Image 1 (cartoon, helix red, strand yellow):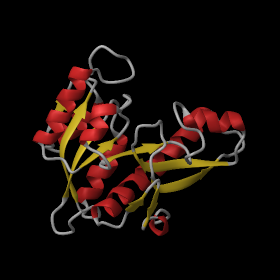
Image 2 (cartoon, one colour):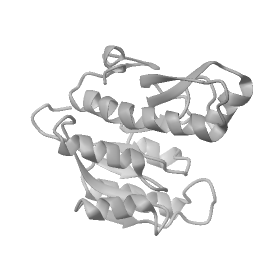
Image 3 (tube, helix red, strand yellow):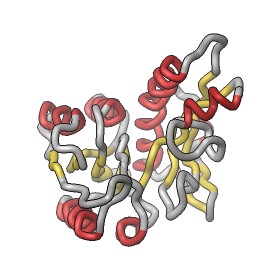
Image 4 (cartoon, helix red, strand yellow):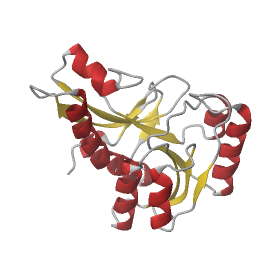
Length: 214
């Protein structure tokens, strides 16, 4: 990743886009050496597209196809083409509610990152904050990781811990985890953009010391 040329980001999201906003604001503030060149969503009225438009960033609705939890073959081809057309260096998943596998991950191998609302490898999958609360752990958090063919199994880039408080509900815990996500995700992308994250098999190095930065 060049330090002189901003990393070109393609952001995929399905919802309100709070993590995208955090990343875009950090870029605008000069702390992340990157540029968002495309925002794409599988939901035509998603808030993330509105936030992109407000910032003058190209945004596109791309139909997901016939499946509920993943892109069908035609949709996958369309997403790959749109990201390649935008010359994206790194694909950033920001609340994208479709599983990406197969050809998409081969097209962007080692160049897709996601944020998950738990301290992986604990509590992969859906509603991880509720899993943590139901299990009774005292600490959970969020994880930025590379995406591979498994479910939340890719190499970890950075993590931030969030305590589980007495009296927490799934909603209150989720809200604090989301705040931690908005702090961690820009830091992790900045570290990738500066070439500080080195992948060694399933492990990474170079970002652990920065994960607690405020």
